[in-house]
Each structure stands twice: as structure tokens, then as C-alpha cells.
Image (tube, rainbow, N blue to C red):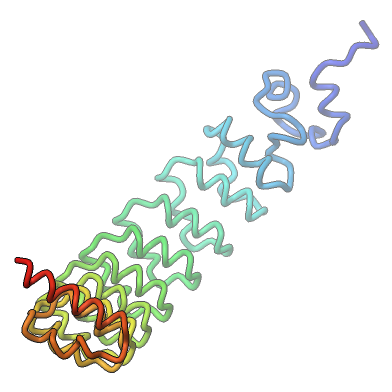
Length: 252
């Protein structure tokens, strides 16, 4: 009997992390932890996560831990009402987790967080009536997220955004009657999106665009009477699209 080793003895000898651990030997013997695999004392996010996933009731205890990764993982598993105190944590990874867990009415306090990923989480979850507060964010990815979620009636605020990618989102979401706001955009990629969705009158104007792919996008929405000149367009794709639509009209 004296030569036999218990699971606790084996764990202690393997990594030495069990020394002084308050969960030793009970948690090891009941397989609620495993040195090298699920251990709250390890400096391994994978091991910490596995431990707290198996023992979520202990997560709150580690919300103020000195190790940032232990705090961040604890914030995933602790009760929601206990993580709000980490909104101003010194580590951005911890705050990112908090931003995914807070109730939406608490998110407004994190809209000025210095970390972009935190603000992205806020922008993706903030109630629509409050989104406009992020419409002037310094980072275009935040503004793009806002543009994807803003109510249609407020999208015009971003039609003059300095970043092309934001205006592309706006062009894809504006009601067709408001697309004239972007019809003269300096970027052909934006104008092409406008042309794809334009009402007939605006589409007819975009048939004169200097970029061929904008003209091509406008062909499908423009009135038939404006298409004959496009059959002689310098670009074959535009000519073919115009001829195909005119053929449809004749067939009908």
C-alpha cells in the first residue's frame, strides 16, 4: 500500500502547482482540476479556462486577480452583475470581455474606451437609439458598425463620412429615395452601390458616370429609353448589358 500513489500525489509531483493550493487534494481527486490541463494557478489561458468552465461558481473570486488573463477568463464565467466593476480594468482584454457581458443599459459608459475592440463590442450591442453617440468615433471600423445598425432615418449623418468603407455601408442601406446623397461620391465603388439600388431617374443619370462599372450597375435600373446610347459604350460589358435589357423589352 505504501508504494501506491493516489491521483493527488501524482498531480503534486507532476508540476508542483498543487503546493499550497486550497483546492488540493479534493478538486484533483474529484477530477474538478487536472495539472497540465485544467488549473487555476497555471499561467496558461487554456488551463485557466478549463478550470473555470468546470467550476464557474469560483469565477467571481478571481475578478480581482493580479494576472490579467485570469481576470479576463473569470469575467466570462462570473455572474453578470459582478463583472461591471471591471469596466475600467487596466487591461483591454479584460474590458473586451466585460463589454460582451454587460447589460445593454450599462454599455453607454464604455463608449469612450481607448481600445478599439472594446468600442466595437459596444457598437455591436448598444441599443439603436444610442448608437448615434458613436457616429463620430475616431476609428472607421466603429463608424462602419454604427452605419450597419443605425435606423434608416439617421443614416444620412454618415453619408459624408471621410472613410470610403463607411460610405459604402451607408450606400447599401439608405432607402432608394435618399441615394442621391451619394450619387456624386468621389469613390466609384460607392457610386456603383448607389447605381445598383437607384430609382430609375437617378440610375439614368449614372449611365453617364466616368467609370464603366458604375454605368454597368446603372443599366439594370435605368429606364429603357436611356439605354440605346450604351450599346456603343467603350466597354464591352456595358454594351452587352444594355443590349440584353433592350432585347428583354422587345421580347415583352
